[in-house]
Image (tube, rainbow, N blue to C red; front, side, top):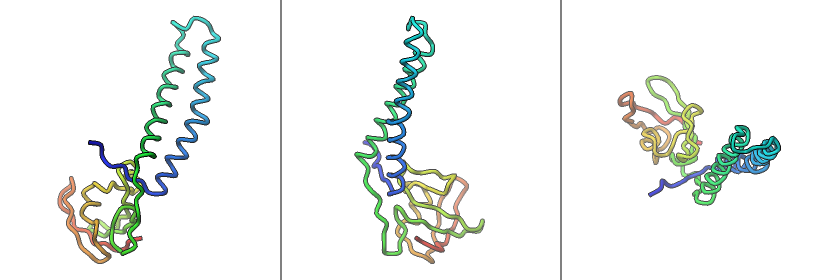
Length: 152
């Protein structure tokens, strides 16, 4: 069973922009490289030709992957009730200081930029909670306690 694909509006826009670039720029560039490599002659020993074909196949695979995600994704709906959910931006305070996170689907997760997957331990622990709530989270580094300072 495939994991549900959840996208924020920003994540959907990023995927759509990436798809346009792949189709309108990258795929055309690969086709041009194949054409110029063909003009060099014998294709069986033409490394440029084989490299361009591999690139074209890779780009086609990325296009198919993004189209699948876009057609099967469920849009995250921000909760207006003041509780943490998908699409929420939260400020958490722990003994280590404040941390900012945005709760996103697994497709968009990028912990280095503060975007954590809804299925991550922190997101699971704070989902459904309100500002002022204290939650305990079992992380790989051990148990931590967070207080929710802000939700937007």
